[in-house]
Length: 329
Image (spheres, rainbow, N blue to C red):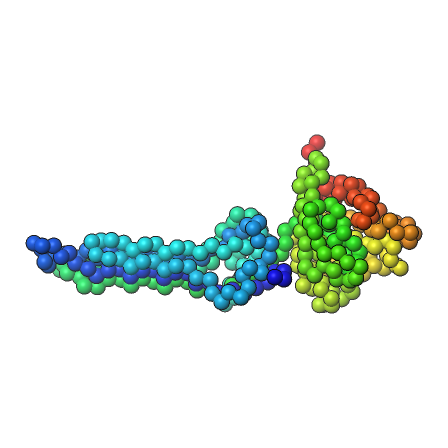
């Protein structure tokens, strides 16, 4: 199933069980007092963040997510069985909105976080609670309350330490596969990566880093051209941006400027993120000239890398790791 980072779902909590209007029927007390038990509370619907899912595609095509209702009370003051709650797994980085109110309920930006999105209805009281000196034979009991129903909009913004950004065919996917165990699709044509890919890499004293390969950006991406506007949101949560430039391209400096212009136009705090520039494809003859042009045109350091051969990968990772998490002195 295709990657899905935005979806609307309907959730319904369980109704509370009804209270019982029952009376004791003992051999020597045919008109015994009330003994109706209480109805149980209905189950709630809870969103839970976990690493077991990577996007929201597992929620597609399901018309309603419903928790169990509580059981009704019976005689002999027996209470109903509590309704079983429903837990819906979502990835960390999921923003939850109440569609009707137009409000963000919570930004689930941590693992193992729980959010109750629909509360179960309260169970009704049995008639045993309504006996009084003047009403010793109450024949009524409370009905259970309905559970909450909500329509939610879920939007995923990936959480990663490092985001790889660049024009199509800059070599981001190859780079991700070289530094991690991720296996993104790689081919010699634009838009090979159709959705963000995540990989994990270990860098000596710096430890573990999560790296996201963002689908290629082209001029006008922030306006919906190409795939950019679909996935630019995933850059917002990355701590460090790696600008991957094809040093063998006809004009690598212009390619970098197009990339930066799209990030600036998108905004949302992305342009101000810490970042580095790498000149990729240094295994190709034309790349050396491209590297020199980038170094002359840009004020920041440009790190030469060949994702295909692994050349410069260690230097690139060390530079990124220092920005993500400087080692303790």
